[in-house]
Image (cartoon, rainbow, N blue to C red; front, side, top):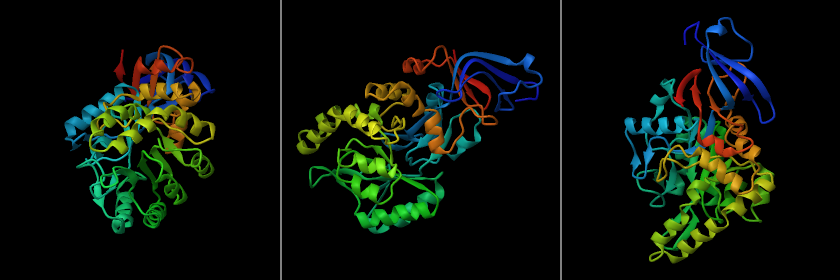
Length: 365
């Protein structure tokens, strides 16, 4: 952006859920709340402004078969961007998407490296598939190459048991999490079922993805330890279809998946009521389409989370959790402008009027 190009955003600027300002400017891609010289020549946007939304469980560079090429990764990132998602925690990808960091028109990505799974216990071509004795070494390697996160597969179907079972012995997973923390990385884990949760939380895990297996026994443990969850309710909606496909071969697994689906809203609301941090994630990039962040926020509201807290889970709160700024003085001007107040109706998020990345309008109507 040249010296004389200034973006002026006015109307209602939601710098926080209750911190409402009248206007902001973007100068050289950065936010300021002080009127800069030359603002009379600025581009003007009007409406209700939010920080760029966060999808805290998304897979850029991945589809249902594994890693995708750069052109496909770009389309995925653009789809998320145009939906207002401007910060992604990429919760595992087999593709190298570092080139996206050099693009000033795409979402910013926080990578968790490649999934780490037990041998033959995850989706083919997605993960490092290893045995427990190698877990610490692989976690250390992913901690070093990631952006401060490591992704484990905590449970998956065990074909011999015919149901979901934990993937890792407690001793090995505790050592691996300790090593990640020593290297300055946080650890999260894919978990659908109940049985892996206590070991993971007592071993020091920082977050659990999906967390459909939370119960009255483990919810207080999560709350006490401050372990966050990313429910991915738009993905959990696919459980009945998955269960139908596995019914003939794995009836116990199918019944389990249906039960987890049936109580999904109660599980999320109970977690929220207990004080567990809840964040928005769509699980896009596997079987799910990108650009579903508005639908996931609406699902959290349907589960009983108040609208302002559901918005915080994809905006102010999520950015703070991930260590990235929102609409703060001097922060990158990554923001979304809407026609109406999303605090009054979160469905507004589904129709951005303008999307701004690094101070430049890149999408909208």
